[in-house]
Structures are given as structure tokens and as C-alpha cells.
Image 1 (cartoon, helix red, strand yellow):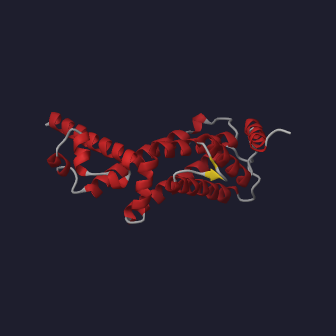
Image 2: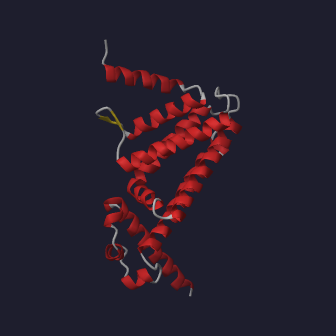
Image 3: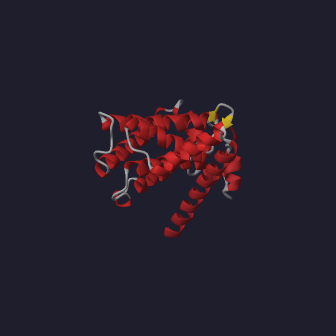
Amino acid sequence: AATKQVRSERTLMRLLDAAEELLQERGLSGLSIPEIVRRADSSVGGFYGRFRDKNELLRALEERQFRELEGLVDRLVDSRRWSGAPAAAIVAAATTELVGAVRERKEILGAFLWRATQDVDVREEGLAFRQGATVRLRELLLSECPGEFSHPDPELAIDLAVQTAFAFMQQHIVVGETRSGDRILSDEELAHELTHMVCAYVGIKALPEMAKDRRSGKQELGGTQ
């Protein structure tokens, strides 16, 4: 019985892995049960033995993605990682993690965003994740870096700044890129500018290397005199 359960679990993981690969390659419109089954080296009967339909598969995939993202947040807000670190360093790490998570999961997250407009359960789960991540990052910043914020209401400012960063990256997912004029921003530039945005609004002193990078960027865009 135990061996059968292990085989069943492995088949389930292969089906989810195959669905995730297809979403990344083709998006939601290219996700088909026959192709999922083929890639998973399974069978149609094996698929329907675990899922009623494609929507139920997507819910299982969404739950797995949220667990992975929760793990990312767990590692980010571990206070042992930040003992004595300035607030700007925490913000920079958070924006880098956010941009990296989107880069690795852009098509999958795009599919989830679309499904959130159609399915209240998906929408509520996404909102709960965002709210939880916001609260945990706010608590980390306020506990590790008290007194570093010039905004008159740091708690409110951090909440709104994190929500703004999430909204910014949601637009990035939907549009597929972020531009400044005719220039497409790289992931590194996105993370860098999001860090500046959050720090400026919350009133956190930027790290010296951040200010240096910004001056260099302006010279490159404007040309040297």
C-alpha cells in the first residue's frame, strides 16, 4: 500500500510539473490535458483519477505555487538574516526577490491573474498571500530598523509601498515588460528602481551604492558633458 501511495504521489508531481512547464511555454490557452499527460508520461485515466477537470488541476498548481512563494517570504523575513542590517538593505532584498519570482513564473502568474478575475477563490487566495507578505515585511522592518523612517506614519507607508510594488509587478506580468520611453527596463533595473521608490516614500536613507548607481545611470542616459 505504501509503495502504491508513493507511485501515486510521484504521478501527481509529474502531472503538476508538466502543467507548469506548459503554462510557462504556452500560457493558459496552450494548456491541454493530452499534452500534460504525454509530458508526464501518464494516462488520461491517471489524470482523471486525480482531477475532475483542468480547473481542478490549476487549483492544485496554484496552491503549490503559493506554498513556494510562502517559503520565499519565510526566508526573506527571517530576522536572523537581518541582525544589524539597515532598512534599505531589507527593501533591496525584498524587491530583488519579487522581481526574481516574477521572472521565474511570469506565464504562470499571468494565468493566475486572469483566473482571479473569473474565480473568487483564486482571487481571495492571492489577496491573502499579498496581505500576509505585506504584514510580515512591515513587522520585520519596524522591529529590526526602528527610527529609520521619516514618514510620519511608517506602518501605513510600508503597507502602501509594498502594495504598490505588488501592483507594479502585476502590470509588468500583464504587459510583459516595463518601459521608460523607448527603453525596456531589465530585471536588475526594475528591482533597483522599485527599491528607490519604496525607500523614498517610506523615508529610508538609501544605501551609498544605490545612490552611486543612480548617478551612473543618469550619466549613461543623458551622456557625459
